[in-house]
Length: 249
Ligand code: F6R
Image 1 (tube, helix red, strand yellow):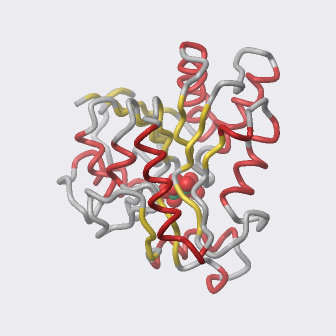
Image 2 (image 1 turned 180 degrees about the horizontal axis):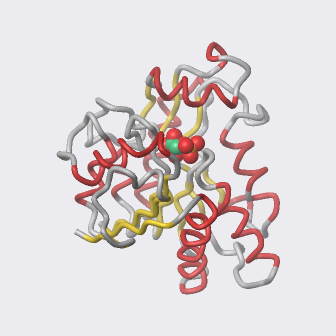
């Protein structure tokens, strides 16, 4: 694991986007694993800018998203399908056939999870983008989820629903379940890029970096990934013992 500490959200976005852009230039048919949430929005903005300047193209890029809420339609403004379209896809030249987001259709959710899982094995991600929950989740692998999990339907942790209620009218409107890549799927990526900002992530980052590899902090499994880059701002790095802005294990 290598960790870069930078000043703030803007610098995290700059550095992470530079890595994604570099990889897209090196491999125009790259397979990307993508995340939603507040953390990657700055990266997506920079990717759109790079596309507009013709530095990168998404024409041959395939994408696989981490997760989706169960039981809300694609056109719901809080669905991850809607989010990805608004924040990235509608602004670039991606072929719609190359976009993969797990479906949260409640009627056939178990079948859909199996199908998505199969696709993930046939399309190893070159680069997987991750945020981290304040409870240490990655994707929606909540504390206590088995580290050997493949794509599955998860009951969301109370803390996650509270954290995400900022996007919904009230806590009651936050879905109770989601479909998510399992830890095993996330680990099946050649390179992982995790970003985190803000003090609310500091404990999760500390536990991810120094803690035992344990189901209580799902992100701790990343200690075992051979190529994991973490970019954090000063607040999220607050509890790390970093004498310089770079740390590697
Ligand atoms: C999103 C996802 C989640 C988020 C995490 C952090 O697809 O899988 O694990 O990355 O909850 O969310 P933000 O970035 O909103 O703090």
